[in-house]
Amino acid sequence: MTKLFQTRTSVHDPASSLAQRQAARGQAYQLMLALVITGQLMSFGALYLLPAAATSTWIAVGMQAVPFLLLRLLGRAVDATAPENAADTLRYRVAAGGIALLFFSNMNVSLLSLVELTHVFFFPGAARWLLALPAALALGLGIPASPNAVPNTARLLRWFLAAAFLFCAATVVPTGEVGFLYPIWGYGLRHTLRCALRAAGSVWAAGALAVVMPRQPETHPARGSLPGLVCIALVALFFGCCAFVLPGSELSARWGYAPRLQLLMEMSPNTLSWSLMLMAEMLLFLTAFSVCADLMRRSLGLAFRLERLPLLPFTLLCVPLALRGMGESEPFLQRVLPWRLPLAAGLMGLCLLGNLRGKGKKP
Image 1 (spheres, helix red, strand yellow):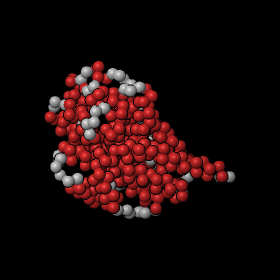
Image 2 (cartoon, rainbow, N blue to C red):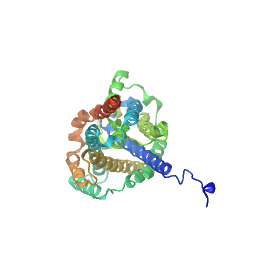
Image 3 (spheres, helix red, strand yellow):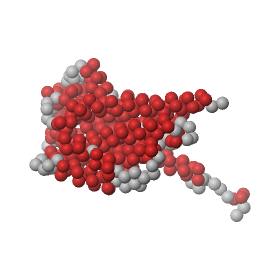
Image 4 (tube, rainbow, N blue to C red):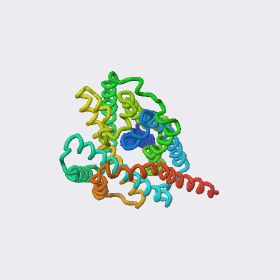
């Protein structure tokens, strides 16, 4: 066949095909981070926001869209200024090590939440180590090293999570009362803003991919932000429904961590809704743990230039916090978790300043 009749389309062009695969992988990882943010917002909402903000909890959660978008913008700036060899520079390796530590903190919170739900609703009389240790062993040995395994799991889970949350909300809403939503600002606008600021540590991962996977193409900025914004809106809807079915005095009561996570479920008269909600939250924390473990492994691989890294030692390190339980760990977590946002922003800022400084030195 002569060259006159030969064609080259984007399907057969190797460069275009590679760009399409990278863009698809970037979208998959944005979905993974959105599920991670969902789990962290749910856990911190039950840990701190519900008893502290009461009827304005859903507003404080909705406000997380602001730090989420700011971190996304910071991440895009980091990625736009990154040099070709960004992953090999010292600043990126240091930042990746810090990001790995933050993902490890998410793993601890996710396993703790999973054990709390299992202990309270399934095996209340069992020893906690019988729940935490087998879970850590199974996750440490079972999370595959394939780059597509965890993203595919997250992709399948998103529809089930959204359907379970919305179905549970639909069964609870008829039992609600508009008057329960008041006062709208809970204990006041300033207090709600302060609560929202502390909760912002839950969305720290919004721009983490700019450090962990530098120079990854993104098809459209809005498309990359959409999964995270939708998840923030769903969590805000969840806590809004809680405020709709219970007065503020009940929202701020000392229910305990696991019952606060399942507050909508407790109010639902529908057994199917009860079951779906519990299953959805357990799958959420299980998937969030797997996602954070996978991204922590990638971060440590970048920081220490390692191609293969076993996860089992790190999953086992999450067991001590799960053994303590949320009752003993609550004050510690409330002090530590909000600092994840400034630490992540500082690590990304370190990369950005180094990138800008490197560009300024070029002739």
